[in-house]
Image (cartoon, rainbow, N blue to C red; front, side, top):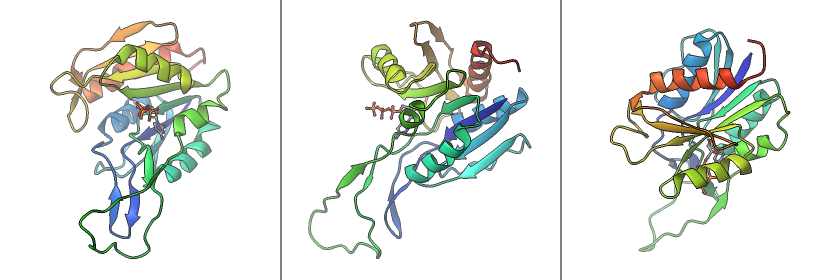
Length: 216
Ligand code: CTP
């Protein structure tokens, strides 16, 4: 069995020394890669810039990228052969419309940046998902969490969506622990307790493997 995983942030360059990024560390995605490999699956881990070292398992192939566009290209290549897609990356929704060839100099009192929309990796790949392929997305919502997550699941053709809690201390960006709720298209919900990201990853992998009709 093969898994495609996206993880970490993306960096969108502004000039040769600056970028727009976010605080994702990649911890949840890397923990998922390890948990899948421990179950004997082959993993392609498409990772944005993360300080974490490449996972040691020989079952995990790590592909390092920087921008959303590069992440899309690497993910699209691995997606065709993969039985399961897991989109754990915090992809920048927008990138600078122009990348300056030289360092942007300090001139006026204000600076306005024009941003253009990035490709939605999960939604775009979802359009060509085959019936036997299984897709899992992540969502971080601040209000109407369940309704927004369910809507995202439909829009992006996910079979499961993992809702990250923002309300609980110790959950989310940069922490070693996480608290998630998993939803499917039928509205079934599984709540995970606050636990280490490694344990959340093991729980998610068991849930995903149990949902697959594929022989392991
Ligand atoms: N995602 C992706 N490519 C993007 C943006 C998001 O693959 N350009 C994936 C993420 O990896 C995650 C899911 O889509 O699995 C949800 O991302 P999110 O940014 O929360 O969704 P959006 O559609 O951007 O919704 P919002 O309007 O809430 O930002």
